[in-house]
Image (cartoon, rainbow, N blue to C red):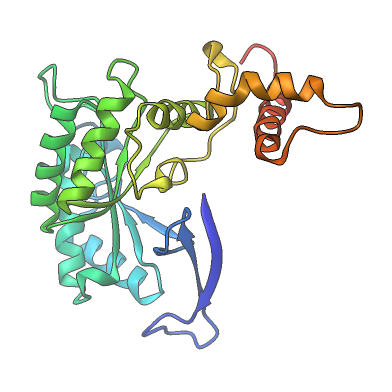
Length: 275
């Protein structure tokens, strides 16, 4: 999900009436174009041959034309064409002649990149190995947006978040996100991380860079805990709410707790049965 919009005429545009819209990445100050260039078709190695086989020269033309049109957001993944997509994307950005800071470069980690048991997932080990391999293939010293490419039901979310936070502190990654996560799992993960005090300090964009997802807060018995404050005062909020006279709500400091609970209940009622 992106924030407020900014309309800017792209540099070197071939049409005088062409404008590109830019939006904040989540609540951050980073501006990305509304259109993002995906590079899954770059390379065509392994099973990705069925998706696309664009070589370096074609990729160079696509990336250059996209940058000319004002697109500054390029997305790839370590699993695309077994890493070849990242290599082609990195070279195409270098061949474009643009500064590295002109491009918001995103890549992902999680899906299998080898035959070993630890060549996949969102464990600290695989994340640390994955970022080094991606940086080398892309020919850069930092990733603008690093995303977990799927939901890991084995690794504790605290371990994943601590690893991502360490990458931000090291400067290897500037923003973090997730891809292909249901919305309820994002909220659950943020709640757990907040309660355990492992939420990345500057990376609230984690929940906002995800793909389009469907909210189902009660699936698998999940309860959304938004903040430690909410969990600590939920019981007292209910007691105080009952103690107040009819027509008088709880104190201002506790009203937001009831607001979030009502949001969760409304979303659950809208969720179709059997999903």
